[in-house]
Image (tube, rainbow, N blue to C red; front, side):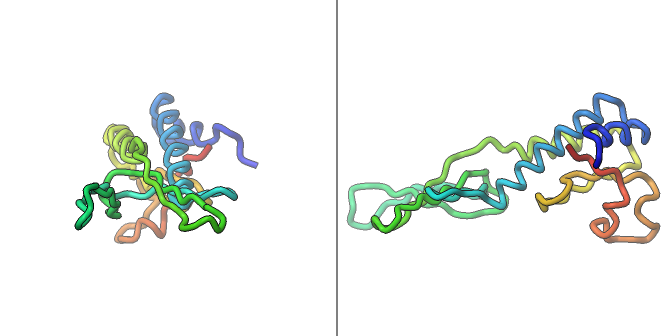
Length: 160
């Protein structure tokens, strides 16, 4: 079993400061939870997942009211899409709640840290079943290799 702070020790040995190593660990945990929520969760009352898109108000033809619709867009703002189960009492409903964009904030903080360490490359792995962030040292990716995603596990896994 891995110890809780092995990634901090590995980052420190590679040349990262203690503060930056701890910050990268926090960023990895934030991204991991975000990726879990993108996959979704649920219970017997409904299901939910993070989606990106835009809410639009549209005028309903012949009606005195406006309707709000949701347009999915991978570059849009994050929303929590919640499917409410009504158990045979009519049509199931869907609602969208605006969320703070923790993913983009974490990626921005990570880019600022990585800029201080030339030669190191970060790789974000979005499958929540594994570690969310890997830091690749110079030499972890063979010369001439263009598929970073094939070699990321040679780097330092920044996990819980």
